[in-house]
Length: 501
Image 1 (cartoon, one colour):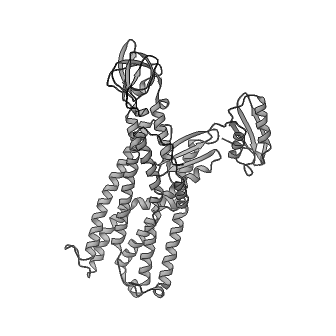
Image 2 (image 1 turned 45 degrees about the vertical axis):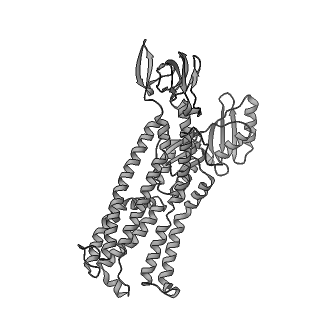
Image 3 (image 1 turned 180 degrees about the vertical axis):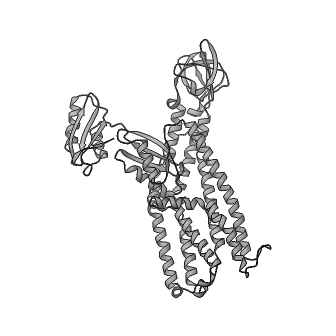
């Protein structure tokens, strides 16, 4: 981490790769030292380190790193994918990216709403996971560690998606029933409810609408409160404010109709509108949750290709152990018809192996001592033994999974544009809704013949603008399409780099 000194000078220590002699170090010192804002630059050729003192108001670590790389040297940085929880719309994506890009050691951030992941390229000498987690939490979201076992992560995500889908399904079913009761009850089509002319009907509608408003729609209120706490508005704000306007106006009209009648307002109730809006948005959330769950199915299938156990030779006998307990150099035995558990080199026996899951080649490949075998491929004809050479994240299958995950997380150019629009979308929508409300309430009756009072009509316009402007599809459609496409390609042996071209 950079440490501040006097006079707003910060010191930066960077690892530098590619130096072949002392003159390389001198060249870096000269070029970096000439940059505006750099007070001192020294490079240790033996340690492969550059120490730079600079004024952060004039120059950033990114610019210093870029200058070193332009000279032909390399400043090592890592690229990691972190799960992010709590994002609900495209504006959340923009917010998380801005938070992470504020760090001096972060070069690139790609946050994907469909995968619920943030891919961060950064200098570990400057920033790390603890910094990122704190910044993301300040924005109201949760960042999880990247360095976890892929199977565990996928299992946790599956369970979380199952819980989310189950909860949303229950809420949606409840919303459909309540919305139908409110809609048909308002038309006098439900025998056990009072007729529309009866004042008691308003009380019954209030009793039916309230649980849906605050239980079914609680996630929208929770998201709104979290956003206000952290100084932003998102899609939850649009839904919560729009439905609350309809609900609380109707509640006021139910219990205090006198003031409205005194002002010449016709007493009308919008409990059914608020209920139906919440139900429709819940249905959209359920469809989104299912799309996210199914879109990552290809990754789960790739992980599922690897066998759970391996038969290793230890202490002069064979034993079956979990694949995770295989160590480098273990001799593994494979019988005909079994999957090869890990990557390695054949040391005994001959066979043919179906490697179509890697190469796409349908014909089995002959293997003899000295040949390489790939984990998760299928042994066909003979028994053989091999020595384990690549395990865990170094295996071919793990690298394929990583490539597919990176491709799914990559952003197409149109998606970058959509995320930029979404970043300012919600505040603009709220402003338009308020302006529309003010215009129709103040001069609406001079613009057109209104079917109801100006205030009531203006309220319906306000609710309509707030609700119809949900930007979720804007940020979800493209990444979901990329996920499904790259996943299907991986299943068929085709690896897609990403959505850039």
